[in-house]
Image (cartoon, rainbow, N blue to C red; front, side, top):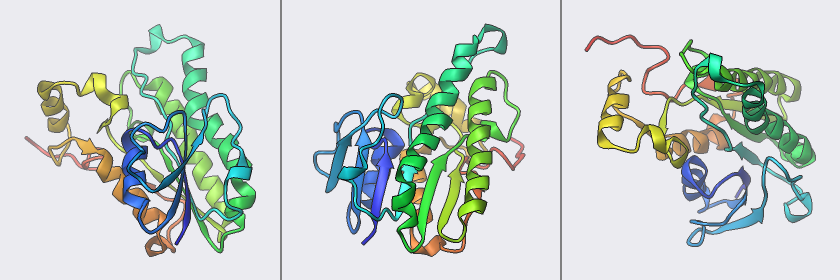
Length: 232
């Protein structure tokens, strides 16, 4: 049985990961609300990644797995973006991530081999219009994760999941109709929109001993978008 800490776990990908892991593990969900967690065997810790410092007294001394789920989807033309938009995206996606990892680092190093899973975006590796702010923030996440993996190997494994647009509450305005979902699906070689469950299954694998020889990697769970060019 592993001790798993999810930062953000009441909605979307975080909730799907909590559902995937709550049986057979001790799962701690640090999030602003405990909405949707009622039927799950998890411990909820009130926490806002933007404003709070995580109270480690409520956590076990050993943390075997950490998943940081908070993020943003800020798609606007560069000419209309003010500097505070870049700062906001960097804060929630990167700075708050760093703060959480620094806070629980003693708990992670207390494990025989802990696993950290963070989320990037297909936009960090592909040049996509209207993605300058979020691509910059997620690019920071990917570079940080690889450097951290190198520094703490073999004690801590660090890996990145880089999705394309995924059907979650965060992406609702982009996928809130069948027509929008169909259009998004057509942009991907696998002709479907990703789901929270797709990300949860990858996260579960990266937290498990089945991935014990994997670290410093970026997994593009994106329907083939980042690597495949398919006609039709």
